[in-house]
Amino acid sequence: MNFLNLQYFVMAADQGNITHAAEKLNISQQSLSNHIGNLEKELNVELFTRKPSLALTYAGEQLYRHAVQILEIHSRIENEMKDISKHKNGSLRVGISYTRGRTFLPDVIPVFKENNPFMKLSIVESNSQALEEDLLKGHIDLYIGTNIPERPEFTAKKLTQDKFYLVVPKNIMTSVYGDKETEYAEKFRHQVALEDFASQPFVLLSRENRIRNIVENYLQEHRLSLDIQIEMENIETLFALACRGVGITVYPETFLRSSVTAHSLESGQVYFFPLNERFGGSTLSIAYNSQRYLTTAAKEFIKLAEDACKDRLEVG
View 1 (cartoon, helix red, strand yellow):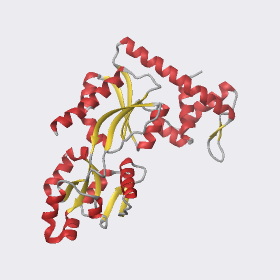
View 2: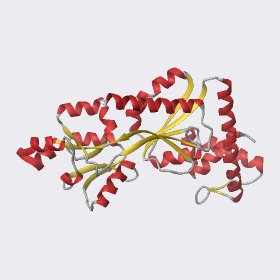
View 3: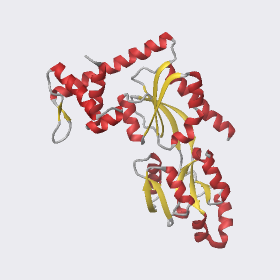
View 4: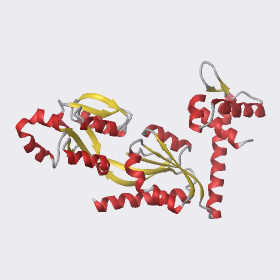
């Protein structure tokens, strides 16, 4: 039985859609259909019903259960043999959120690649829920994210604690506080509460995002509501909108180190106010599936990630 056919079959079953599965595998839909067709011919069964939507047959459900186990054993054998042979080749798949990668990975990848020049490194960018599912199913080896939920299949190593800031456009500060703008800006430089700007326009991440969940929990706990004008997935776009005076946004402390953010702070387009302790923060962690073999390359990447966060804290 062909391992590639099994791998493609499992991906199609996980996605429940040939188009999406083919995109994930970076192959054509026809090629994926051919692999599944070859597997069906070999086993003399139908694995999927195609209408009204793609779904596993009874035979497909039984094969899927075994295929996941077979591919896991195959992957474990390959990884163990690569480690034993001492050859620094192979692949490592790391999942991270769309914008977190820009602020985090440049501190880790150059050193990793210098130590592992023949290692193929694949970075998968998506939202938290999708990446956790990818880690569970073995589509990625490591996942870097905030407030990773506790579950028996995951082992998460804490990298750093992240506080949050309000990014307040200057025009909103002027509108709210008038000639006392400087006085209040100095006051909020130490801490601010969402209540101080609750009636002003906000631009926030969509509800699928962990940062937005933290905001919603605070609002619910303190019986507040915000005037949310715009919701989207990309926090950097929200930051840019705040710089243009569209609305206030919530921003992680680790993102403040970027050159773009530093320039905005110096230019006076926006104010950065740390949210008070009642708002809390988030924990940035790197996680792996504890039920799968952890390669030497994955262990090294985790160590580099921990060192990068330690260096940032010492610099800060």
